[in-house]
Amino acid sequence: MNKRRIFLGNVTGAGATLLGASLVSKAGAATLPEAPVHSSSATAAPLPPAGGRPYNPVVTLNGWTLPWRMKDGVKEFHLVAEPVVRELAPGMQANLWGYNGQSPGPTIEVVEGDRVRIFVTNKLPEHTSVHWHGQLLPSGMDGVTGLTQPGIPPGKTFVYEFVARHAGTFMYHPHADEMMQMAMGMMGFWVTHPRNPKQHAVDRDYVFLLSSYDIEPGSYTPRTNTMLDFNLWTFNSRVFPGIDPMVARLGDKVRIRVGNLTMTNHPIHLHGHRFEVAGTDGGWVPPGARWPEVTTDIAVGQMRAIEFVADNLGDWAFHCHKSHHTMNAMGHDVPNLAGVDHRGVARKINSLVPGYMVMGDRGGSMGDMRMRLPENTLPMMDGKGPFGNMEMGGMFTVLKVRAGLGRSDYRDPGWYAHPKGTVAQEWTGEVPVAAGAPKTAPGDAVPAAPALNARKPTSHRH
Ligand SMILES: [Cu+2]
Image 1: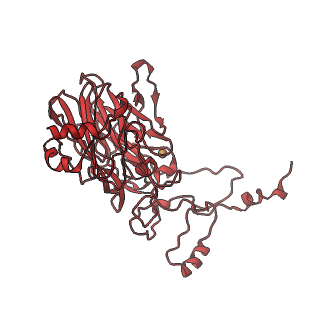
Image 2 (image 1 turned 90 degrees about the vertical axis):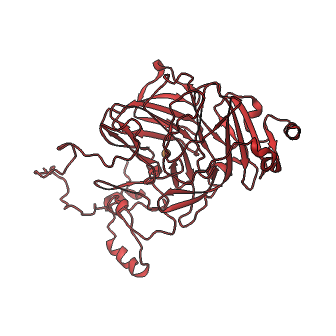
Image 3 (image 1 turned 45 degrees about the horizontal axis):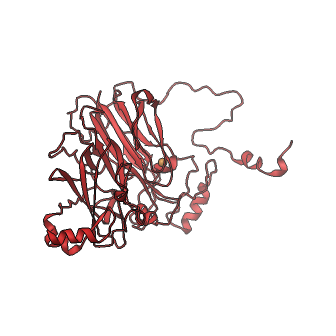
C-alpha cells in the first residue's frame, strides 16, 4: 500500500496519475479492473446496469458497452488503447487503432452524480491521452497532452477520476497526436444517464460516432495525413452494407445520438418521420426550444440526440445527405460521361485492357456494374434490397419499423412486407409525348453535341 502511494504521488504531479507496468502486473493487479475485449463488430445487446443507480441502457450501433465494477462507491472502467483490426463491412478489414479490441472503443454509460475512475493502458507505439469531450471536470482530468497532463507513454497506465456532473451525450478521444490517432479510429461514445430514469426516457436509444478513413483500394491501413479527401465514411467504423439496421416497434419513442469526429459536417437525414433535436453535447434542449426536422447537420466535434415516435411502418433510409458520403472506396476522380455513347470505345479498350469499364454513360446505375476489385476493397455502391441493388455505401443504414416486436427485440426483422397497392410501380398506360420533344427510344444515348458546342467561346452571342 505504501509503495502504491509513493508511486501514485510522484510521477506526474498533474491530475492524471501514472502507474508503472510492474505495479500493474504484481501488486497493482488487484487494484486494476479487468479490461474486457470485444472481437465482434456486430451490434451488442444493451448492457443493463449491474448495480448502482438504475438507468435505461443504450444500444451502440455495431458496437458494445464497457462493463464496469463498483469499488468503494466508485465506478471503475479499464480502457486499453491498442492497434485493432476492424471489419468495415464483410469483405474489407482495416488496421485501425482503438480501445479494447475495437474501433470505436466501447460505449461508457454512467449516471449523473456517479464518481467515475477510468484506467487507461497504452499499448500503442506512441504516447496518447483521453479527453472526455463535454464533461464538466477538474482541469487536470481533461486529457490534453502537454496542457493538463504528460502523454501516457507506451506500456504505461494512467488513471482519470471525476464526477459525471450532468446528464447527456458525450464522447472520448485522444488529445495527443490527434491527426494520426483520430484518423486511425481512436474514439468512443459516452452517455451520462439522468439521475431519475423516468426523465428523458425512451423505448430505444441508439448511439454511434461518425468517422472517416482514407484507405487506398487494395490496402489495409488508413493514410493519416489526408485532410479532406477521405474515401470511407462510417457509422462507428462501419460502412453500408455492413451497418446493422436500427429496429423499432411501431409506436416506440426512439432516440438516436450521433457524434461527429470526421473532418467535415454531415447532414443526417431520416425518411418517413419527423424528429426533434432533443440534445447536444452541451446537454438537453428544453422542450420548448426543440424544433421539427427531417435532416440535422452535425458539425465537426458536435453531438446531436434526435427523438421521434416510430409511427410509420416500413423500411426507412437513414443516411448522410452528402451523396459522396454514401459511397465506398473507389476512385472518385472519374469524368462524368452521362450522355456520351462510347460502347464502341469500351469494346476497343477492352481488347487492350481486359476488365476496363466505362462509367455512367447511361447516367448512373454504377451499383449494377461489376468489375474485379482490388483485394480488401468494397464496391462503391452496394447493398442488396428486396427490389435490387440499393446503390449505397458509406454512411447509410435502414430504420425498420414493425408492429408486434418484443420490447427488447433488436434482431433484424427482414425486409418490410408492403401492403398491396402501396409500392410505386410501372405505369403501363399510354405516355403522351409533348409537341416538339425529340423522338428517342428507351435506352438511346442523349445527344451530347449541342451542350458541347455551347461551351465554345466563339459561339457566345451577347
Ligand atoms: Cu456526410
